Image 1 (cartoon, rainbow, N blue to C red):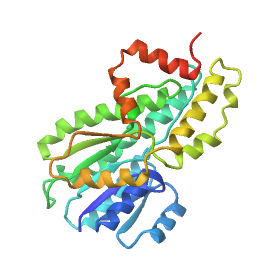
Image 2: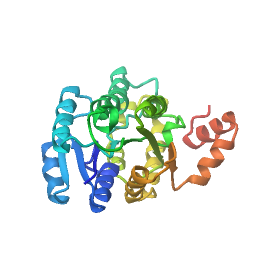
Image 3: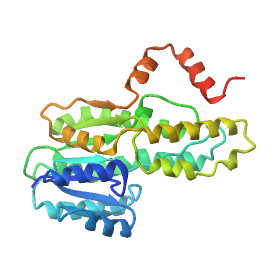
Image 4: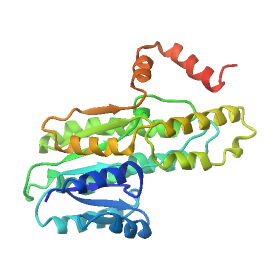
Length: 281
């Protein structure tokens, strides 16, 4: 049985990826931060799901989980590692506390570094293990290529994740390990509920307060009309199993708009986005 490690499987893309792979006969080691989520997922999935409880920023707990997986593999290699766990910090770039930037980067950038380093031996850097080299799938975002206003920390983190992925892909050619990025647009996941319930009153005295309200309404609309999460789960399966994967997959319900955005001069696009959010003087 081929095995895959996925981080952040309690909901959303991680949950869907685990479900698709388990249904197709794979064993999934899935990480969660809460024991209650681990217990729930054991009930929801079949015996081919093995919960791992750790926070991606806690290196000691990640290494302990990696050792657990290594023992379970019995000398075999992983088919893949899916770095999915992440958070989204939003707000005016100059108003956000430095600690919010640190939390964003720690989770979305340092976390995948820690996890990748811990599981790399089971993907192929340890020559003593048996089986073909595995693949690493990085769940990025459309924000990995575009920096939108009021989402600077999140956009920074996804840009950094994609840079890490590209450098890592070229380094790991030495071991035959491939690194593939998936950069989805809006996906129907519980993250949008968190955005709806978030308190933006802290910015009530900021010149960006009205833009924050407009942005929240726009993001909720995107989430409501976003891609079915199952589509990303199926794409993760494809990326892990296709003989010749692309280095990056962009998938979105707004593919035409994104294509047009790439073609427009940067200054023109700036003004279009700023006008939509009320950011022009």
